[in-house]
Image 1: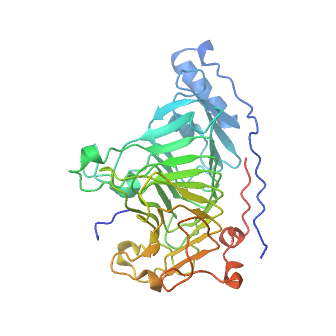
Image 2 (image 1 turned 90 degrees about the vertical axis):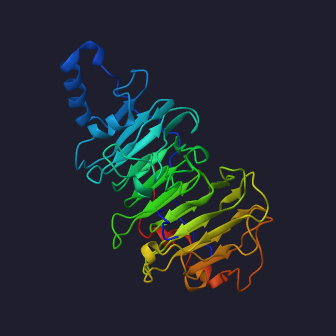
Amino acid sequence: MNRSKARPRRLRTAVIVGVPLALVASTANAASGAEADAGVHARAAAATTLTVAKDGSGMYTTVQAAVNAVPANNASRVVISVKPGTYRELVKVPSNKPHVTIQGSGASRKDTVIVYNNASGTAKPGGGTYGTSGSATVAVEADDFQARNLTLSNDFDEGANQSLSGLQAVALRTAADQVFLDGVIVEGDQDTLLLDTAAKEKLGRVYVRNSYVIGNVDFIFGRATAVIDQSVITLKKRWDGSSAGYITAPSTAADRKGILINRSTVNGDVSAGTFYLGRNWHAGGDATLDPQATVRDSTLSAAVRSTPWVDMGGFSWKDDRFAEYRNTGPGSGAASTNRPQLTDAQATGQEVADWLGTWTPTAS
């Protein structure tokens, strides 16, 4: 983010894990030159699965090429199956290409990696800098997007680039509704996972399940209505080896739900008492915002501060919406004015289903 300003009710998700994909074999070797290109693109329009492989054994050698082949305004699911390897590229799924799944085909989510190293202050070829949102390795602007069984990373080297004006480096930016991240790793340092919406007045729901989110400063942030469920949040030391940071930085509109961390674990090789659960980001100094973060039914390591919330940009977090409920572990604590806890009655209105509404994330 640009900080130049300084009850028993549970969501039932129908998640299908490990469903084999109907791989589409490439016949590009049967033709040559323009004929091969034309043949591949003609088949892409009809395919339900597009394959990507660095070694040329798939239909495409880059993930972005496969995204480009998805028909505009497609009405049904297109699965982009990515073979194991490290794909150093920028990927953007534009708003006119909904119903896309990007899925690693390896045995582990570590086998398929999409990575780049832009930062907010990185110079753009045409002049200017990328800015925080523009630094994203993967940018998702299309509704009903899914990603699974892969790693999305920004490996920008903060230590080697201290002269840059902005060190924020996003691994994944979402600006869409009904985004389902299932069994992924999202890794970076500062501003790893940007959960945005297409516009301030639009709803953007994100459900992250069975995943790892890794970073150190404001690394789960934005104005989306987002759930981190049954996942691991891993804290990293800063570029200079110090331990200090913030997990969340919600920038929620007053009539929306913010960030919910549910049934998850906070861990990492950092010093005790050095990380905040979050701070209130009033983007652009907008006083009408009402940032919200709830951390519940989760295990907190000793890295979490005993006063886990803190002010940001001149706004008091106590005027916004921050709370915990039934957390455990050495980083948890009793209710106090500096550590609000939901009552049982309040907690019934802050469950996963309350965040996602009528949407039930289903793997496809």
